[in-house]
Length: 101
Image (spheres, rainbow, N blue to C red):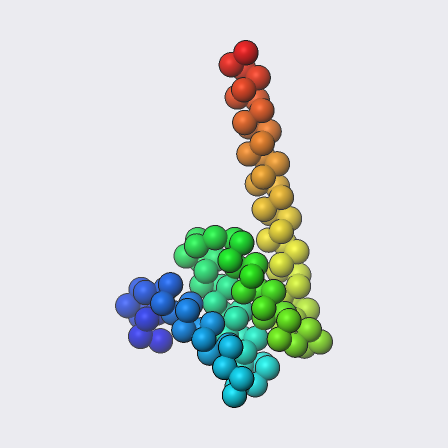
């Protein structure tokens, strides 16, 4: 919590991952820690790829849980968003190159 309050989000994320990897905590707590790490990663714009990794880890802890179902929907939405961004980038790049010729 101290890392969050001081704005050290990367350290807070790392601590959450360490908690999630702790075999002594429940599956639910592990899922929530990975999910929170994904949320912070996305909010701090630290990379969608890493956000997806944390979300997939959250899902894999207990694929049958309610949280896992929600996480799978979020994964799908982020993947779709990334595909749309990539398509837009390449279409813009293509148009720019086409105008240069």
